[in-house]
Image (cartoon, rainbow, N blue to C red; front, side, top):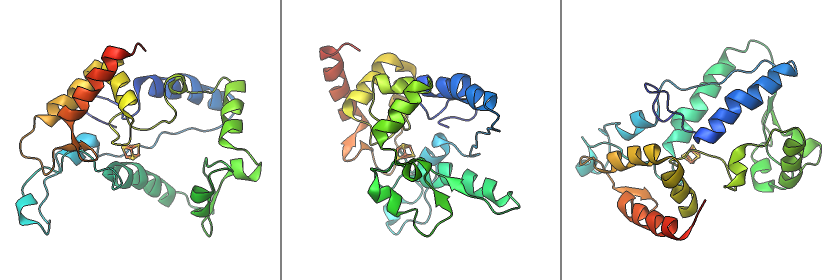
Length: 213
Ligand code: SF4
């Protein structure tokens, strides 16, 4: 979640709507129990986390600020802990099924020696085949009309074009990032790798002046 208090998801609005109103009802119709796991913390907690134990003294007492690409705290602090906590409540042996396609060898390697299994790998499904299968069952997220990948709308790995669309189509979300970028007491003003939010915003405006979505 971006903001638990105001019920703002970290997923793009089109995707979270698809999850709640299309995917989950269909899975339930097929007889599966579906639960969404959530962290009590959200993106804003991470942004406003006050750093106290940095080896660089000038950082202590400041807010952590935007997520760092390649060291994403949202993954380690918001996504993984709820899954781990949930699994602790399962009292019998279990298998985790993970959605990694057979042509994602690097990611598959990480499953070796764990109790995680990729059904896509077992049945020889590539990413393209998985895409086509979802399409066949009308289970393709609408985000694939305009993006190659899913993920948080505030992710530092989003392309400039994805951010340009976010600003154009979900200006209210972009404005929330803009407000955060005005915060003074943050460790780093970088939003996407070594670029500040204002630099990205400028680039996004250039793209939007040339493109129509
Ligand atoms: S999509 Fe991006 S921001 Fe979200 S958890 Fe993954 S790396 Fe972090």
